Each structure stands twice: as C-alpha cells, then as structure tokens.
Image 1 (cartoon, helix red, strand yellow):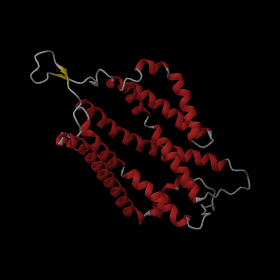
Image 2 (spheres, helix red, strand yellow; image 1 turned 180 degrees about the vertical axis):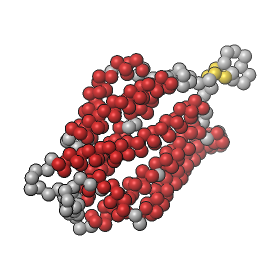
Image 3 (cartoon, one colour; image 1 turned 60 degrees about the vertical axis):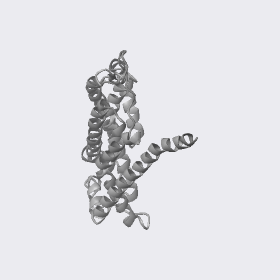
Image 4 (cartoon, helix red, strand yellow; image 1 turned 180 degrees about the horizontal axis):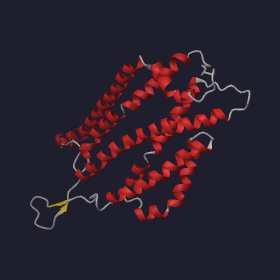
Length: 276
C-alpha cells in the first residue's frame, strides 16, 4: 500500500522540477531585459532620434515631428527603449530556451536546432537592419514627396513608433523563411521536390504577405515580397543538407541488456536523468 501511494508523488517530481527550471529561466530572461532597459533608459531620446532619422531626412525643411498626447513626449521614447532592450537580449533569451529543452533532445537534434537558433537570430537582425537602412529611406522619400501641395508633413511620434515597430517585426519575421523551409523539409511535412513545384504559389503568397504587413504603397510591399521569395529559394537550397534521412531522424538501435535477439530501439531519454 505504501508503494502505491508514493508512486504518483515520485512521478510528479520531474514535472515540478521542470516547472521550477522554466520559472528560473524566464526570470533570468526578464532580468536581462530589465537590466538592458535600465542601462539604455538614459539614452531614450537619442535612441528615438536615431530611429526617426530616416523620416527626418526626407521631411520638408522647417517641418518636425509632433506629440498629440500629453504624456507621449515622455513615454514614447521609453517604450521604444524597452523594445530595443528586448531586441538586444534576444540571443540570451534564445539561449535560455535552448538550455531548457536541450537535455531532452537527441544528439542529432541538438546538432540541427542549435545552428538554426543562431541562424534565426542573425536573420531576424538582418531583417530589421534591411528595413531601417533600405526600406525606410525609400518609403519615407516616396510618402513625403507624394504629399499634396499645401499639406505640411508632421508625423506624431507615437504613430511613428507603432509604424516602425510593425515594419521591424514584419521584416524580421519574413527573414525567417529559410528556417521555416528547412524545418518543414527536415520534419518530413513536405519534400524538397514538392516544395519546388509549389514555387509559383510561394511567390503569390509572398506578395500577399507583403501587401498585408506593409503600408499601402508599392515600394514597401515589393521590398518585403521579393526578399521573402529569395529567402525561400535560399532555404530550399540549404534544405538538401537537412533531409529526414540525413538528419538521422530514426533513433539509433541498441541492444537491451540481457537480450540475445536483434537490437531494439532505445526510448527517448528523459529530460532530467537524475529524476529517474
């Protein structure tokens, strides 16, 4: 009777330990973002001025940005600084996520996921940089030049922040297309051949995504759609190195102790071995 009562308690220990570890790693990620925010808070206004540079360069002489709400001159730069802190801490946040799930992965899964995490981080930053240095100058030059005569271009700082954050997220997420393509092929959801045959649908989908995620102008839509298509081609090419067979999706066989017959498949190891 005693053994029956203790077994459920023992089985709950690994789950509780996982929750405790998840809590600790979430707290570490939040603390890192908080420290980065506190370190950048003093430079909130210069950070906002830097990100407003592409728009200010193309605004007519004598015009400036405005603040409609009473508290927006104070809160908007700090809101932007918080997002900058989160962007800066993305590598550390991904490391905490990796450290949490890595013990429960096979060796071949670790060899696959870790490079993809690193690559996805650089691709996200690449998308943000592409939006700032390539898309913003072209879009703002077009929008300010298209203003009717007699209309003074004066953008609200809060609306501008929402606009650039949306564009940053759209391009950062769009630049993850190679990772998504590789994962689809590696997981066996679709083969490289089938994906290559669906290229026309991908191109149409890329332009639809560009139309939905960007402002209603042809320049920004095209500058998002074409990179999505090209990055799909890049991911399709790299996916040949991550096919299901080459990635070693099947578990390595091993003989059970005391078994004289053929090798049997080893079960997936528990995430925390010392928990039993």
